Length: 170
Image (tube, rainbow, N blue to C red; front, side):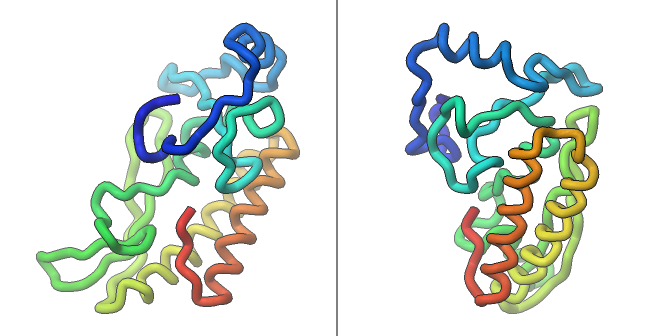
């Protein structure tokens, strides 16, 4: 497990490396490559949101673009909610999200709106993220059912946050 905030608190439940290697070879999509030549990503929390354990039950291989769809970025947002950052040049909060990773590895940003209130921008992000996840289910319909069900669960959890006026933290 890499030493970075995204992986803080993660645990490895594979017995040993050989067990992990054997498991990988039996998995759908293991060794799949994207158009840019990158291998698909090993993911631990698409099936079970907020999961911190790498295990046979919780891991799967997915396209990098799908993996990045659910990886929140805190680089530019500081203390603002997910999908929101303060723009000094205009004096407003901006709601943005990634359109995903293109086959060449590039990411693009989608502008969702501006507001003086960061929570108003966050609601814009929540609504757009739900739509983006549901569209991904259609786009990646060929993936194993447990992955598609996990995506539905992610969308449902964000919808619940939006409906209850709660900040999404995942």
